[in-house]
Amino acid sequence: MVKKVISLEEAKRRLEEGWRPLPRVEEVGIWEALGRVLAEGVRCAVDLPPFDRAMYDGYAVRAGDTFGAEEDAPASLRVVGRVEAGEWPSVRVGKGEAVRIATGAPLPPGSDAVVMAEDTVEEEGEVRVYRPVSPWENVWRRGAERRRGEPLLPPGRVLGVREVGALAAAGVGRVRVYARPRVGVMATGDELEEPGRRLGKGKIFNSNGPMLCAAVASCGCTPVWLGVSRDSPRELRRGIERGISRCEALVISGGTSEGERDLVPSLVSEMGRLLFHGLALKPGKPTLFALVRGKPLFGLPGYPLSALLVFRLLVEPFLRRMAGLPQPSPPSVRARLAEEVGKARGREELIPVRLEGGLARVVRKGSGAITSLLEADGYLRAPRERERLRKGEEVEVILFGGGESV
Figure (tube, rainbow, N blue to C red):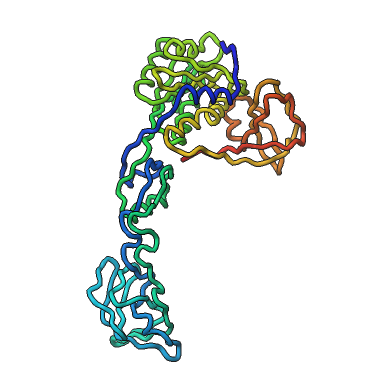
């Protein structure tokens, strides 16, 4: 039975004191690095770019040879060679000479600028230049972006598509990143049936399992689905043992309340140390946290809305820390309540709302209704000390969607 409830802030404090997640580090190739978090800073392995390169197709020239060129009086230069991308120049540009060059190709020695092809006409080994260029115009200078050994990416940076491209360009083939913690997910209840199967009488589909696995993955962790445990102490103990042996953390939904078949609190108390059971929070009152063999076990309510909101507020920050990810900052907006909202004093309440033209309308379906998550744009946090929120009162709405993915 939930005998004593604590605030969400007190629950977080007990979590901090009882369990300090320590990220593990591993090395991966950049082909597998997308979405990973750098455990160490990365420095350039080469100059970027590694040589002076042509920005455009055209002619490598001595800039001084083009001074004074104009439409009616072009400069005439002798074409003495050609350089393609991926080749190294075998010819030198002398006074009054030019070399045909492709975009990205190395600048041949003696040249210090590139005339764009559209500003020239080539005939019989001569190129007429109709616009002058200044020294190093249309050229990427060697090391202009980064010099070899200079910092490229700092530790803690999440590797997105741009970062992976920068690593490759800098010659970095492998990086040290935080390992993705394995987090076991288990649902409890005789009434649960797996989605896709025929639904028997008195049964409901297991929505929390897939939802919480997706939530775990969004925290940079690897979800390990442990299945549905029936309301049996032996089966539940076996599932917890399997999860604790295979994973670094465990999330259980259901079985944490006050009914005869809510077996999780007493069982984890036998198997480990129960740090708290009960939050002064609606929905989410029967939440618990325990350490079993030194590993964290989060017990969440069985109702989908309760389970997901408590996961986001309490579990997600700690899983993200294990994965080395920065803490999320969910977006929020200010809106005015479209109606008066009553609540019990002494408990913080999370209220799903839908936004309509600057108004926040309460979605009244209960914490057991999964469709509340679809119809609501976000939720507001009604303070513990308030018994009612007034119609027209300005409130902060925390939007769904923030932190939903890495």
